[in-house]
Structure formats: structure tokens, C-alpha cells
Image (cartoon, rainbow, N blue to C red):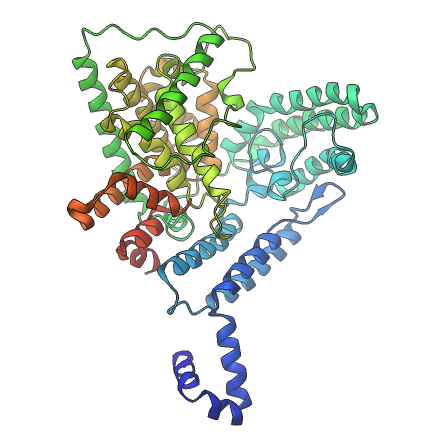
Length: 545
């Protein structure tokens, strides 16, 4: 009926509209849901809507508030379903799928994940990364002194911490055992957070010290409450195979089911371990790389690797390196440059301290450059990084792929042959994490099972015992369903895209042109990029069936 009215309106517009007000109203309604600009408006409204209300520094995650948000979400989904996109360009329809995925992401939060009811760390600041203050757009300002125009806001948040934790005790009605383990294991980080804050406040805002101390005391009391109630929080943390597959299809726009994903990850794990061992054998007479021995040596290595890879990208015409793509604002806390040189280094540093090029390529060329591009994207739907891990296959899969694929472009040719071994060792740590992801979310493995598997199967797994890094990564993939899996399978998707485009263009394929087109598409799922770049819609049909 909609199609009939639309065609009728085109050919008999003056006559019909002059004598039929009802049809005129229907035509105006149709126009309102087929205009691309209305999609942008709807998304902006939705992003404003999904922020939970915050009263006096306390976000409301009560049963009533969540029920109201779920009902509001359904209304937004109905409005989106009313759009007729048949006349839109492929790029516009890609944007429509991004908006649909974002609404489905909130649906998955309500229907399955429900972190406010299942994950004690959701109410903490230092752990989950998706806690109520951040989820509500109410982040902490930790640069002291706090700016005068932000001081009242900061004070309200600080006073609200004990109330947030009291609310947590009411809301955690379906706590998952592994999430309780993670919360208790690192609760001291939260206590340290407020102790350090108290020290800074004593220098700059002494009137707030008491509130910071009360916040720390509330965290300790919360830990005691968790210990006393953990026996009642025994639900599995994983989402289950069916929900996992639904998430892939409807939120991540990832054209694979749980079973297909498991096969791909297992094959990749087999491949990288086999390549690692073959490379080790080839290098058996090559001297091993000596790791750096000081913070200064490590800093020098990192900066040299960054200079080297940027020059390599330009010389080998891999993609266009824009003038704004520099290391300004790049060096993060994960490097540890601001910390004393430790006696024992956590797992990944045992690789990057021998050869830092692959890790810096992942972080600098993969992530840092990606985010610089994304914040300049003129398309408001694609600008920045989407919520609910939409496009994480693109973000993490691409960055991970660069570590190995640039080997074949020649970026290790001037390094020790042993560097290639490290590329495969790092890749193998990703595949064991990906398998942990797959099996924890199928509920076949507990968190402890996954930890033991990684220690037993990662290269030099003995270095993972009591590793903060390992616990952090597994917590990341439990809370952010599929995070490590989509890194591995995203790499496979990137290689598929290269193959498809090369096959399509034949001798006209040019790597730099391909890469520039690929990067211009933004941080969107590979299935959407592939549709936009090649016109192939087989994956989209699978996602929409």
C-alpha cells in the first residue's frame, strides 16, 4: 500500500492533493520517514534519550527507570522501522543499518546483558569502563585543580558515590559469579583511586577531602557486602550461544554465527602457531633479540619504531599519511613511561621490549590514526567510535591485521629475523583470548577455565600466571561480549575485503587507492564497508534475512 500511494502521488500530485486531504497527509508522512536527514535527527534524539537520568550525582538504574527506558527504546525502533530506504544510495542505507544496530545494542543491554543487575563492577569507576557515570555521560574530571566552572558538578558526583553503591545493592538481583570475582579481585584499585584523589584534593580543594574519604569508605563497605552475598550471585557471566549469535547479526553486523566463529578462530589459532614454529625453526641459528633494560631504552625503541613505520607507510605507498597524523597525544599510560621500571614486567611487555614495532603499529597506525580520522569525519552518523562495540571488528580487526600483513609488505625486512616470531607470538595470544571469549560466552567455560587455558596455550604462557594483563583482557571480553573474538575474525574479514576488491579490479587494483577508499569509509563494520566498496550484498542479505 505504501508503494502504491508513493507512485500515485508522483504522477497525479496536483489533482489528487487538490481534492483528497487524507492522501495529502499520508504523502507528507511518507516523505518524513524517507528523508535521509530525518535519520540523522532520529539518531541524535536517540543518543540523548539513552543517557540515564542523573539526580544529584546519582544515575538511576532502578527497575522502574530501566523499564521506562526499554519502553522508550521500542518507540524509537518503531520510528526507525517506518523509514522507506529503497530510493537511498548504498552509503545512506549503510548509515541506516548503523542506526538500527545502535538501537539493537541498547535492546541487547536490556534484554540480555543487564549490567546494572548482573555486574557489580558496573557501579565502580576504575574497572568496567562502562559504569553508570560513564554510561550516563557523567565522567570524572581527574585533572587537579578542578576548573571552577566544573567544581559544583564534580562535588555532586563525589557526594553521590555512596548513594550509587547503595543503589547497586538494590539493583544487583541477578549477579553473575565471575563478575563478582572480578569486582572483588580488583576492588583495591577503587580504594586506591579515592585515596589518591583525597591527597590531591587536600592540596587544591580541601573542603572536598571528607567526601572523597566517604566515597572510599563506601567502596570498602560495598566489598564487604559482595563477600557476604556472593553465594547468592551464581548466574553465568556468558550470554549463551543464541544470544551471542543474535548480537553478532543485529548489533555488530557480523555475518557469522557462534558455530562459524568458533571454526574461524580455531583455524586462525592453528595457523599462527604453525607459522610461529616454522619461523622459529628457520631462525634457529639467528641470535635472539635482547630486550631493553630500562625505561629510557624502551622509550627510545618506541619512538624509533613510530618514526620507522610512518616513513615506511609513505615510502611503500601503503596509504596516504595526512599531515595531522602525528604522535601528538598518542603516548598513553599503557606504555608505563611515567612509572618506575619494574622488576617483573607484565606479559605483553616481554614481547614489545624485544621488538616494539608490531605493537606500536597496532596502537599508533591502527588505533591512533583511525581515531584522528574518525573525529574529522563529516558524517555525523560515522563520526567517532560507535557505542555497543559496533564497528569493533573494523577497529580491532584492522589494527591487529596490520601487525602481520605489513610483514608481507616488507616492514620487518630491515629488522632481526626473530621479529617475525614475535609477530606470531603476539597473534597467538590474541587467538587464545578469542577462544576464551567464544567458550566463556557459550557458557562452556568459567572465567577460571579461560585463565587456565590461556596459561597452558599462549606462547610462553608461564608468564601469564598471576598476570594483571590476562585478567584485564578476559574481563574486557566478558563485559564486552565478543571483544577478542572480533579482533581475530575482523582480521579475516579485512583479508577477505582485500581479496574481493582485488578480484573485482584485476590488474587495476592498487593497494594505496584501495586502502585510502577503505579508510575513508570510517569505523563501521566490515560487512558494511564491503557492501559500500564492492557492491556485494551477500553478507547484508544474510544479516537481514
